[in-house]
Length: 206
Length: 206
Length: 206
Image (cartoon, rainbow over all chains, first blue to last red; front, side, top):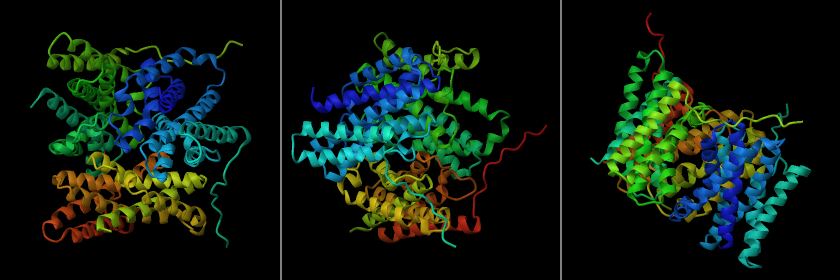
């Protein structure tokens, strides 16, 4: 298994866990859990593959990805009630999934030799899109747009660090650095409130 | 016309009727009706074709599908006021559309010789995605996620029965069985309240 | 630069401005501005390219489109507070973006020699989809579905006029006419209240 495949599997599994947790908040049945989990798990990577015209889409060529997502959904269905605060678990799992998914997206685009701007965007899109679909479909406020938290920014910084590191160290290390930077920024934002200044509308003078 | 084409036309027509009924609830003009109807009608099949890299997408290669969707929209625009309960009509038409769309999606994936897991997913995605887009775009609560009803589960069981039946009888019969199973489960859920146990958060014991 | 490229760049820039304005209403940080702006800017054209199987997708082949969208986002981030009524600015910029995007979508489909129904749909989809994604993701009521305004209808009429004009004058003029018709109808709807009759549910007699 290549490192990119490892990141793909890890992001599918962890994103599927977050999808199933959102499904538990919507009180769906077990097939509903599997549906939302699969949508979340493969959403970002599917967008990446369709945009870069990789054929077949990663999970169509290797259906075991779907098995991983369904297993995660079933796991959550039977254990979610054990957690006191599902929202906290969800937020942190989402942070892990974001980190590995950004690395997976960045890695694929780097390997295909795309322009740095495309590599950046693929990292951000692969990382953010699955969670965005999960939240839009389930009518939650998208985590990706939550005010005053680093999310897209963390993904962006991670992808950027992979591009910079890619010219200094091997691709494997670059992707590990990418995941590390993304997770660190997202975690710092959740724990310490790190953030960029947000836009504030000021009342026009006079 | 092959059986798969028949299912494609039928799902386009019936999903277009449901899209137009949702447009009537949002009080759009006739072009808005045609827009929502087309989006609903071709959404699921388009996702299937993009994911399986079928070129061209079914309605790009055969524009009469769009004509069918627009005709359905115009029909509803001028007759929807005749129905007393548009929501009931909508729910039942959606059940019919789901059944034929699952058969259309399953049939295409079977014909292309995909793995059983992919066939299952294509059946579910083709069946559920058009209605999901309709509801997300029009800000309705997605029927697909309505708590305590079989919807994704009906699609899943239909696709699964097509795979099993496909090894016993001809493909045509397998697809008819698929549509029948899907519709029966969905209808049973609507009439008799058939359902799977849903996830209930239990307060943690002390 | 061909005329179609010009329309692509113009629609990317203006749609990015509208995306950034919506981001300012959601009080995001500058990376969030760039994310929503890029999504809005390339959404419609990406859908067009994926559906018509144009490879690569326009901005993957030419990353400067992303630079244009990011520049627009940064511009809005630092200047949006200067406008008294951001909603008015947003609505009018969206009308301009709609007009040029419809022309870009129509032009590409015409050039590829597609059936008139597909040309119409590509014009409408390219024009409407970016703004629709922007509004769905940011939880705004989609402009495209706002009751009693010409929006999809304007796009539709513009694309239709391009097809008719295309048989009489050169393609360049046809696309300019397309943009003009779309903008005129949308603007007339905003200023003078032009509209088509909308569907009204009537209480059934007795």
